[in-house]
Image (cartoon, rainbow, N blue to C red; front, side):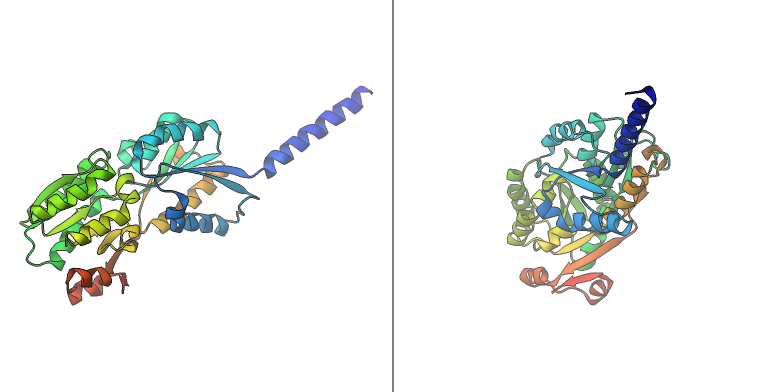
Length: 321
């Protein structure tokens, strides 16, 4: 075979490899607290966001989904395994998951679909630097509004309990906001810490024994994975409770005041698209949630013997009947 023929074959092989690389589906890894079945609404929104941008699953991208199933301590091992699979981009939700991925890689782009305290991960929202960007769910900052809603619901309220996991990096600020707001409203506030699922029922029962008038439930891997149990225990204890995510109301919880997570996941698809097209996470500012929703579960209110004030009902974005 002559030299010209050899060079032609080598050039053709190189072009073929580039063509295969160009058409190979992008590998999107997702690290979450909950299994796919319990996170279906958010995943649907993420896929819809990609579809709107022209992507087709299995043709243009594949998803490698891994979940901690409510156990925060599983995140580091899951993150290490995920990084070893060399994805094109990693999507996470929650501060512990994002911290685990940050500890596992400084090169693979990471998009946080929602994080309670972005300053645990970056020093600047406008210029995050490094390999991490995404969206802040402002979970802690909305805690004060939850206290206010409880007072609007219960005019005779004198004290409120906070069911929060102190091991979550965002919990300190969340509790501070709850305590400060309660003080400003002349309410007493007491923290009921939970670090595992077995501590949830005793904590809620303790709040009932302490005659707390209502309960604020923090949002993290532990509470998300036990949304149904928390809603049920709060109902059994006759404690009106307000939550930060819709899955709690779907499980029978009374009130929701929090960000619209499907909206954040749709926006996450936009950041993933930019990164897959060559943008650097370092140059993509961390944005905050733009949609906040207030939901009232009238079925839960009736079970608790509560009448929702008309003005509070008029403020609701959605009512579960």
